[in-house]
Amino acid sequence: MTGEMTMTLPIAAFYAEPRFRRSSPKFAQLNAAREWTPKTPGASLAFALDYYRVEIFANEKDRRLACGATAHEDVCYFPASRQTLLRAGTTLADVSCGYSIDRAGFEETVTPIFDSALSRLIRDVARVPKNQTGSIASTVISIARARYIVSVTGAGDWLKFDVKWISLFEPNDTDLMERTAQYLERRLLLKLSPALSDAKCN
Image (cartoon, rainbow, N blue to C red; front, side, top):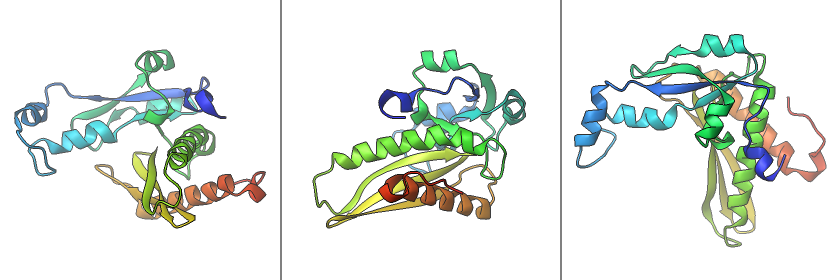
């Protein structure tokens, strides 16, 4: 998939969206703050507003099981329709794979998200002046309420792709996230190596 196709939400999928508790006192704390830092009262809600994303699932049962409370007291997940999300302007750049790497449904769900992220990353790299060094571009892939930051650094004529993970709020397993990062690195290699264009990631 290329171009706009990579940004279109899959039709044969089920979606859950995060909603934030309107009565949370943290909203008032953030509005009252003159300066914003990680130590600002209510800062955890500000992080949560960006951290929790619409999630995609392969079937309705998995979506139903994922809905409900999160590890953040002011965030809950609810079922959402594709039509509602499209009207709100939601694209693949805004969504998360609801499955961890060990779950059935992971591969089919993460693939369009990964392809869209890689397309954005390559587009951003192509806009950078030749031979620029240091950090060039980055993108985020959200999987099972953890974030994987894919970054590109330049050193002369060479580009280095790297994957790091971060988990806020949710009690994610370190080994699982390491394996997910390694999976993404292998998938990057397959996508970016012309000689391996027909290979499969495992």
